[in-house]
Image (cartoon, rainbow, N blue to C red; front, top):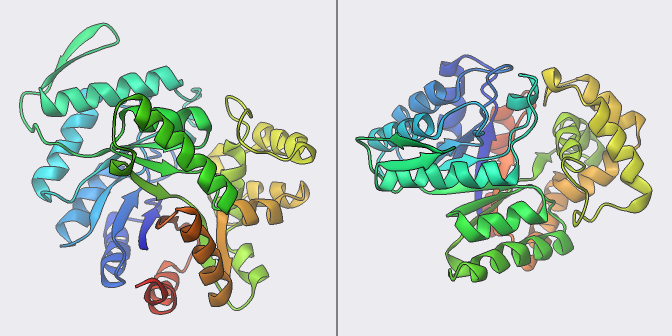
Length: 334
């Protein structure tokens, strides 16, 4: 089993660099930096500094969106990172969450996401593409940087199987959800005549380890709220939402505060408590609790097919968590 860490760059870049060094020291395999221009520092400035201060880690943005960067700008940034750290870079793309809503924009459609990913790949391989009916060029930096799609529903999972090198899966971490998500990705791959086993699948849970389950959950409520907010976007079809919880999740989507996205102690934390969603979201999206709780949840996930875990880490004491996870959890899966 492999593990990665993803941060929102909510601190000055040099502090995030220290987080990145801890990721590498701890034996994690992958580092992601979130892109949300309205609530945190710049993703590419931060990534460049992390690349220059690490030696082994794979890394990249998790995730950029078609709404804030032209594909030529995104391809240029990815090529620059690849030049800085050859063979270590990747690029993850999503429809847009806080980066979009804090600009008053709606998330990109599935068609827009597909066109964007294809355009970036063509720019990075051949140097030319047609995007939104206009020709675009990248005259340097033709590097095969892997392109991942972030997916939280069956249609995006299928699209990732069709066109992407990898997937960041945000559907849940319970065995039934894992198996269903893999099936959608593999169906897309087979439709495109691709080998399903060639797709690099990483699972995006909310994670914490503490003395008790309740203590651990309390620290990640902001992340759980963000996960729940995604569940009713676009459609609820195929997302395995219990009927009795659908009105509550729709209410969460209506009242979610994007300017406080994954902020500790935010209104979103209080909202999922008010709606009685914390335990459901923790069960579906989190690996959380004591050391034994976390190992048990990971073993069940691995048995269902999830063996690459890319942790979103948003609470305060990041060094404590990474050291504890590296000492207590990673060795259990070597």
